[in-house]
Amino acid sequence: VQLQASGGGLVQAGGSLRLSCAASGRTFSSYAMGWFRQAPGKEREFVAAIIWSGTSTYYAEAVKGRFTISRDNAKNTVYLQMNSLKPEDTAVYFCAPKTRGITTAQTMGIIANYDYWGQGTLVTVSS
Image 1 (cartoon, helix red, strand yellow):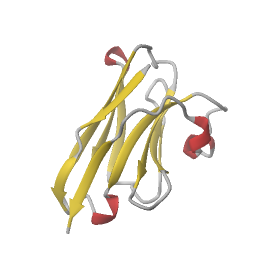
Image 2 (cartoon, rainbow, N blue to C red):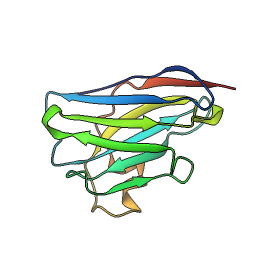
Image 3 (tube, one colour):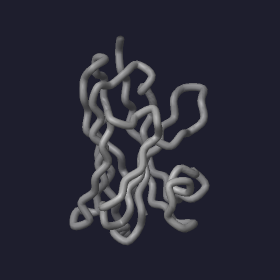
Image 4 (cartoon, rainbow, N blue to C red):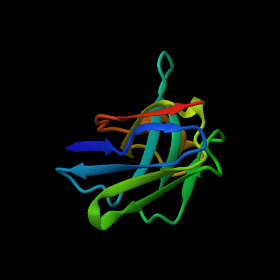
């Protein structure tokens, strides 16, 4: 099982990026999927999540209104559209399927409920 995040790069504050996370080796169409990020010297934190059907989404307060998570189950891919980027959004971004626990607003943000972490993609926002 491999999860490959891509789409990161260097962008100026106020700019936009679209991240993709493609899964191979297994289909995750029946799983909720989440995006997390880890800034230098900080712990990994929840960013956004989406249930298997795509009809419900969840966001961290810090990104609400600026980021949008979506998925294409036919392509086994999850996306994160990031707009109005800020320097504090600088981090390595990871995606993972939620493999434990029921789906609630609280459980979606718990990192221990996710598995199969792949390589992340670096997002750098300059001021």
